[in-house]
Length: 137
Image (cartoon, rainbow, N blue to C red):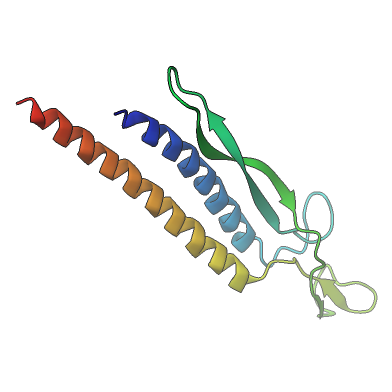
């Protein structure tokens, strides 16, 4: 029985969820950013995961996840009438980012729960390994 392979699988998931948490934090931080270096308002970022095979010596390959891409959400942002805003157009409207804080909070909670679940796997694997070592004493 190899407990380390379970930790290897979980480490990929932890890395992927951490990147997802970072992107959600970036989206929330830029929810009101109307000017970016690329021009225009901030575009919400979306993380995509992919399945990845982890090859083991002498055993069947196992599957973990990794981040396949981080892309910009193409949905348009809301136009808000605010003629005093420095980025207001000639009609007095400002193009806001396409970040919906409610969606970001759902993503944040989902990612943090997945991260916690993967940490529990590592913690339980460690406990099992320690209990196994105690058998020989």
